[in-house]
Image 1 (cartoon, rainbow, N blue to C red):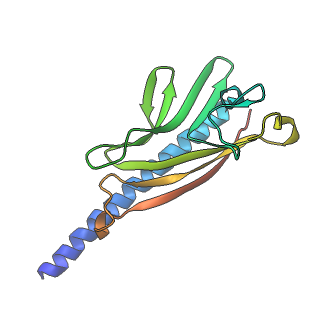
Image 2 (cartoon, one colour; image 1 turned 90 degrees about the vertical axis):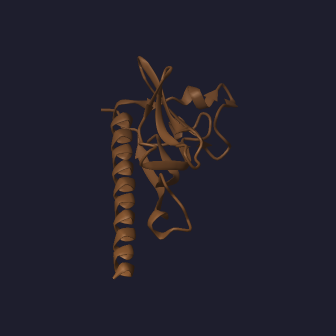
Length: 164
């Protein structure tokens, strides 16, 4: 009887961790889509003249830079992941840092953006600007050795920059 109780308890903890993970990922992706609908890629952040800034030769960056005529914002992973500390997806608006994921529920240990276009001057050669978001999101109490806490999900999303 005690074994059944322990199994049910472990399963309920895992289900709660999976629910938190899915809810946080859904909220972050919807928020990001809303931002993309109202902002454009800030290509000046990535390219100055013929020089690359904050982007590698394949178009990968740790920061997503967006801009509108009157505002510039950035999205990136903030914090160090580890026991007792949290890393999260953040919106950086000037000096203000706003959490897009709750570090008490989930951690974002890996996050990268692939900017399209990733070559300087190729904006006119493509039909649509956009970016891919790659990474991993885990439960805040992630532990590979415990079934109920070994909850993680890979992130692979694509966003078009749509100006309405």
